[in-house]
Structure formats: structure tokens, C-alpha cells
Length: 327
Image (cartoon, rainbow, N blue to C red):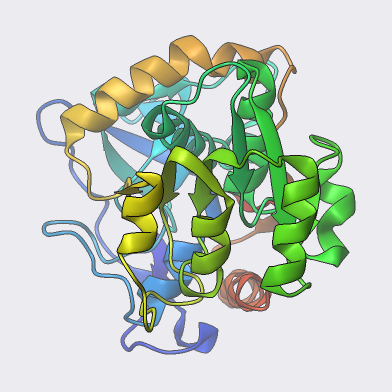
């Protein structure tokens, strides 16, 4: 099979076209023919050597897919999608059968490859935050795929969502909330905007930014608020950080990732997602946050498209999912 590979860490240009044997499924695994995947921030970090690959996981990039489950004779059986620990940038992948999700009949495979990573991540953030109807939540990078998914989950669960984004992406997030603070402004100005929107403080912050926003996060949270940290786009080393600021408000700092979670955890999360979120996607109550869909062939031109998409993500040009559909 063909796949994206790299022989060194570095910029997007290190991505190459590779070829290897089609993987053989083990017990409780299915072989899937991939028809679409998407670019995730973690892919760009792994490419640079900044994101450790979990033990036993393929080094091939790609954390989600949509495609066809194949039987033992290679025949297509059903349309499926899910998250992956790796291997989505390839023609075929083996997947834990318990993780497979049937693609809703009205959603094309070309789009379904952008559903699972953002919505499962956003749903996990929601669960960890223990938010209740009427609570408030500040969402950083709200125009990202996870951000847009989180905004929409807040809407269906009755949470007051406040979006943080750059001026150039306001039009993207205002589809989901009128409560917006502008990330381009100073931290002090952002806090003033937040106080106008939620003077009592927010019950939770969904934070993929890290270092740059830590003071805004602590200042914004209400008593007994939950700081859900799931990324470090601006770094993790915060100078002169005083733990007393957390103790004073009884703030809970909860760190989470999804990729390295045990299979059983993912299975249970997926089952809850299928019950509580997927029906709203299937019936159009919430949408798939698509920035672009790029159709590629498995040749050098296709690799060039991967390079372009990685470059655009690192330049923060995208708003939502950059989906790659395989011809």
C-alpha cells in the first residue's frame, strides 16, 4: 500500500511518498480501506519530532479516517469512521473493531474523515469539565475544528459558550455564539471583554493554547472552576507561575489527551458519543466544521498537497478541518 512517510524530522517538506505491506488485522481488528482523513495539529508536531509516538503505534501520521471495512476476502462491507493512534495517511489501516462507527447515511465518506477526532475530543473535554445546563465555558482557538465542535456541543447541552479567536476568524465562530473575545487584543483587554460577557467568571476553560493564556485562564475562572488543558500551542513553560492562584479559587487543573488512552477508554467514549452526539450530527442539528476538502491521488502531486496543508495549519490559516479525500 502507499502512504505518507518521512525519514527525518523537520518542516512539511520532509513528507514523502512511501510504500509498505498492507497491514494484517489481529483478533478484534478490522482492515479498513481509507477514503478520507484529515490534518490535525498533532500530525504537524509529530512530523517535527515534538510529539512522542505511543509505544507499539505505527509512525505513519494520521489520527482519524473514514472508509470501508473489508472482509477476509477484501470485499467492502460497510462505511465506517473512527479515531486512530496513527496510520491515517495511508491506503489501508487496521482498527479495533470496538472503535468502528457507522457513517451516517447522509454524510459522504469524503466529509466523514473530519468528524471523529474533533467531536470525540470536544465531547471528552465536556465530560471532564462536568458542565451543567446554564454553566459557562470559555473556549480558546474557537475557530479550530475542536473549537467549533465544542461550541456546538455547548449549544446542544445548554452551556453558555464564550469563544476566543482572532479577528479574522470571527465570522466562523459567530455562527455558533454571539459571545466572542478577540485573541489579537492584550490579555488585559480580553479579560475586560470577558467580564462584560460573564462577570461572575466561567465554570470551565477549554485550553489548547497553554503558556500565552495562562493568566487569562486563571483570572477568568470562577470559584471551583475547571481548567481543561488539552494542548500547548504556545508552549508549556510558564515563568513565575504561582500555584496559590489555583488554590485561592479552588481551580481544578485537568490535563487530557486522547491518542494514548487505552482501547477500553476509547471504546467507552465512542459508545457515549454514538448515543449522545452522533444523532445530532446525522440529523444536521450540529455540523461538521470543514475548512477545506482536498482530493488527492497517491503520487507526488498528492504529497505536495499534504505539504501545503501542513504549511497552512502551521500558519494558522485554516478554520476547521482540512480534510483529505483519496481518489
